[in-house]
Amino acid sequence: MTIKKYTPYIIIFYVLAAAALVCASIFDLKIDIWLNNPEDPFAIWFRNTGEIPARLVLPLAGAVFIKTCEKPFERFCGYIVLFGGGMYLGFHLVSYFLFKNGNAHIEGEAVNIAYGLVYGIGCSVIILLVLPHINIPKRMVRPLRTIALLGIILMFVHVGIVEGTKIIWGRVRFRDLLAAGSYDAFTPWYHPNGITGNKSFPSGHTGSAGMSYLMMFMPYISKKYEKKTALCFILPLVYTSIVAFTRLVMGAHYLSDVTAGGVIAFTVVIIGIAIYEKRLMKR
Image 1 (tube, rainbow, N blue to C red):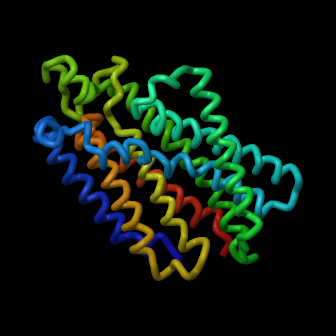
Image 2: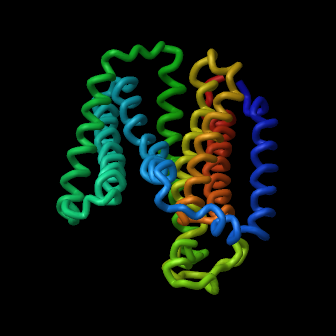
Image 3: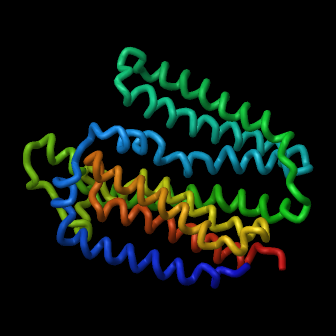
């Protein structure tokens, strides 16, 4: 397996992204005005679940370390990553499924932390219970462990780029324009505003959904996926696109925001694949 097999899909992705940004340069605001429907249940569901791919990276990587590492310290680190990642996932589930769905009566920082701990530990324990029933062939151990570690690094790099860009760009969200009763504060995507406290560009939800592009590592783990490179690209593309579309419906982002979020995630993963192939893959 070489990254060259992904070349046609990489080209298709960037052509589509470029076309979306050109379109956004003209119609960004109009598209949001047309699509805005924050009460749409489909959009609300993906608001709640869209970030899960990024938040699964840590618990799944921790599970890989526990299952494949032999040294006690490495396994201990695996447990730390698993439960730490479980908390990261748990706080997300609590935040969106409880506190953003009309459950104001249970809202509060201490309660938020408590529920997050419960959900996080629960998710981690479920993974631990499933682990003994998973058999990993010896030939897959090394690439799986290496890609798990690389996946953690890529996830943090992606989060850093997205959050840093949000701060620098300072773009006002569409829903905040509606709340202000004016579109005067709208700025095009190519115009950074500096640190304003606004964080519309790029979309964090779309970028986190785009961590599903880590599926493109599958052919490097198992040969049975070498003939399924199209599937390893298309499934994340479809999922990320759905999340991106629902962010427009929610009024949380513009077309350019979600495009940029997806491009950042995809680019980080492609660079990760290139590094793995050139530096880390056992030949």
